[in-house]
Image 1 (cartoon, one colour):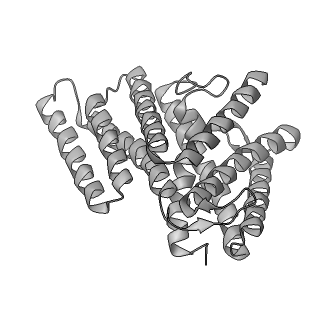
Image 2 (cartoon, one colour; image 1 turned 90 degrees about the vertical axis):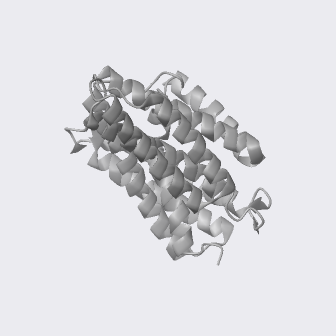
Length: 275
């Protein structure tokens, strides 16, 4: 627990530096995390005897990051089509050692990891010319939105953990994640809603929308966590990696973020939080 707390504090400090720095530093760090996440995904399925299109995935994630950097939907579509064709072509050319099932797993993993991390770049640099007043000074719109997504996600994890530890007695999803409880989920839901609504007050964002976002983030964060749990159960691994002491690998630490950040990105396009 001590290692987990210390790592968490250091991680938040590093995250704050990278997010506030923005620019190429942020993009480079996110792309590195993306590549590491894909490596963990590929290693997990290799552990289960299911090889993936490893190097095609690495190239695809670099291209996805580049598309997010320039903010072009057309390029995303082109790269996606290119990736699908290449991986399926590998299933044809290497059919003796690389099956169509493994090709489909590869495509799913590339999009799961690549699209998720690309949305961190898309969200951070969205509306960069718009400044939002905050208690710590004016920040670019995308930077504020990213902090909302991250603080909401971390709140969900934290409140769910402590409420589940103190009050949990009814299992939420035993076959997927035996440690999750209904009490923990409810605690995470209430805590996240309170935190995100509070951020709405501080940022002068519409409270109805922020409350709805808080509820949604708790649900989406839980889904992201359970998706990775399903993957780990299928592949027979305990953690996706050991890069982050006390937290496991990149996919272990970012499983919820990989769902909440894209959700925020599209939520704020439907409901303009800045008014």
